[in-house]
Amino acid sequence: MYEDCKESTGDYYFLCDTEGAWGIVLESLAAVGIVVTVLLLLAFLFLMRRVQDCAHWNVLPTQFLFLLGVLGLFSLAFAFIIQLNQQTAPIRYFLFGVLFALCFSCLLAHASNLVKLVRGRVSFSWTTILCIAIGVSLLQTIIAIEYVTLIMTRGGMFVHMTPYQLNVDFVVLLIYVLFLMALTFFVSKTTFCGPCENWKQHGRFIFVTVLVSIIIWVVWISMLMRGNTQLQRQPQWDDPVICIALVTNAWAFLLLYIVPELCILYRSCQQDCPLPSNACPLPTYERSFRAETQELSRAC
Image 1: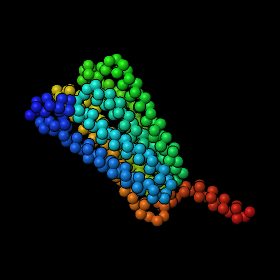
Image 2: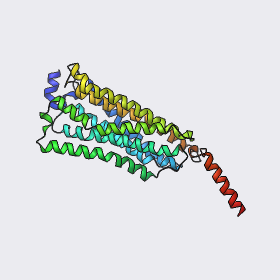
Image 3: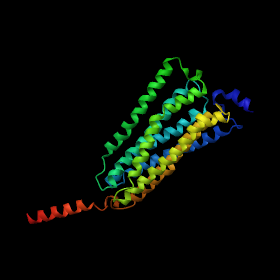
Image 4: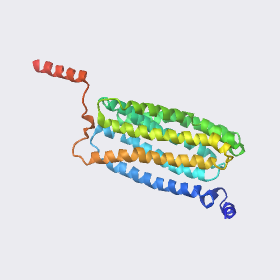
């Protein structure tokens, strides 16, 4: 049956191979993820019009961009289910790092804004947060474009490279994404310090999401570079390992970050007044300064 499937579908045989069912399972999870992400996008669009708190609304365009990145990750899974060829190789090497860089840049931009909010300061504008997310992710886009262009101008060397060379290049291309992940992790930790407790829960969502992502990435990179070789499963397990990590991380983005954020957004829209998140205690020196200012104004 495996041979019949492979002969009839060619590079697409993982989509119907029942002996190695990983392709069918991941195809189903990715398809469900696409549907769920589209529904969440529509929910965000609907609720964005009802948010009254400016500080909360400013991050919504960046979260919408984040959801578009997650949608791209679920769609990219099909490029790994289909066998490596001249068409799927450039898509894999370009979009994998770019989409993850976009997602982690959005998390970094949100965490950077929370660092101000937990200390009782004014939020960045929505354009500033969005520009931070897009700007930080641009470097990975440039790196991916240069690499893919270099390989393609040399006659499409992807199919002529050994599995080990393919894996090394793939991981090296993601160094900047690893840096973004680590930076977001440490910035999200700083959101735990500050007088405004209501904003800290957003920082916890980012912290847990990035922590789980780090664990996923450590596991799949270890398997790709050493585990598959030691188990003598290279290159048979290379595509499944990357694709499993891709789909798992995309679902982690949805379940650990977007769904909790959407729940908070929904609760805020049920209130007639703005969120109490801005009503946090001011530092002592700010309170005393305002009191002195008010006394002087009365005296005048």
